[in-house]
Length: 193
Image (tube, rainbow, N blue to C red; front, side):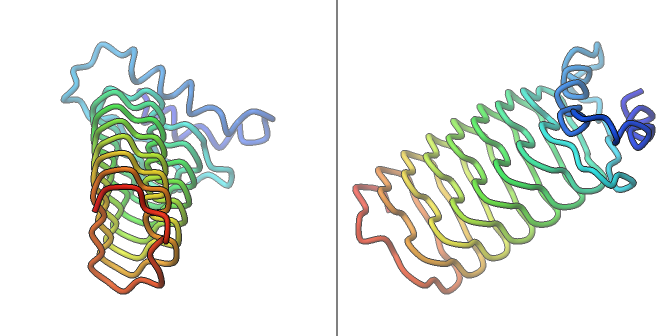
């Protein structure tokens, strides 16, 4: 099973392309004959080297117990990804549909160029949340750094904590909701709220 396989991954961390093993794991999950209601579990809390691309083109329901590295849920098509830990940069990049929930923090570029779907981060996020976002919804329960909604086209972003500088830079559409303090709005906002 995927869960048992994930527990053996520590034996392969010394391989040069180990971090890209998320492609293989994601393909195995998406190609499985299990129904979309099946939940796949991946364990990473025992790894010294984290994995990129978990949930790549995802169509199923995945739970990751531990931290994930970069590009989680990239080009996601459907389903759900839940991370009981932290995620790196480019979370949900180019996602088309589905829901990603992070029960921790995320790095920069959350939801970059996402086309639809939802991202929920229970902790904090880095810079450029929703960068060039086409549609969908992003909710950050904690704080976000600067450049939230930069070049955003449509969709909505909610930050329940504090936000840094240049909110909405070159934004063309969509909505940004700030429920905490912020340092500055951009002086170049072309549309949206």
